[in-house]
Image (cartoon, rainbow, N blue to C red; front, side, top):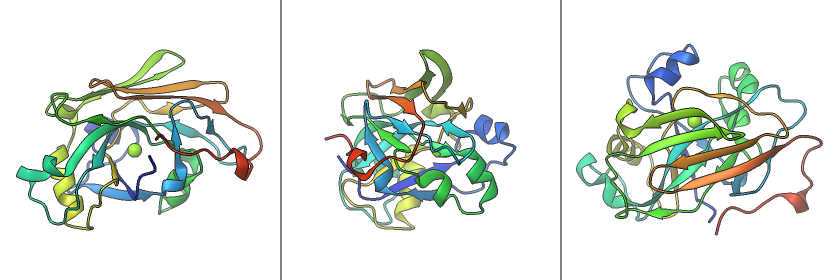
Length: 216
Ligand code: MG
């Protein structure tokens, strides 16, 4: 599955905002990640040699199931067909040097995306996300820790732009972000069973024929 647009939420966990020295925003802070960054479970995350520090960010992803615009919070979940594990891989050095995050968030392979778990098969009010690097837990957070709830995020974003079936919303990362190095294996797992696990590689930029498709 290649998503349409990928809408990401920044600083949606207070402890994560604090670890980066940032304030919690008064309203959801949103940015876009290009669909060309998507890779599937098992595909390698490529860390280019010239971008500085590259971090994992494990997140709960929402797949939009129906077209929606200016949806109220009370019916926001009706627009969501499933959840996925997302790794919002971030070139942290570039993020700090740029006032817009397009470069830091948009590099090829910087959006590992697992398979979709359909809504209705889990408790949507209580989803946990855990990130492991080489099997060691680095991040753990739940929907209860979010600054802005999932219904609030869907409603807010749909008041900015029409959401279309297949769009992806990445709902922000909990505290514990840290760097990835070639040779690492990074896994993001949700309590509902969704997960995505990827090796990290370095070296020269990927040739076009080695650019990967997203999950089916
Ligand atoms: Mg993020």
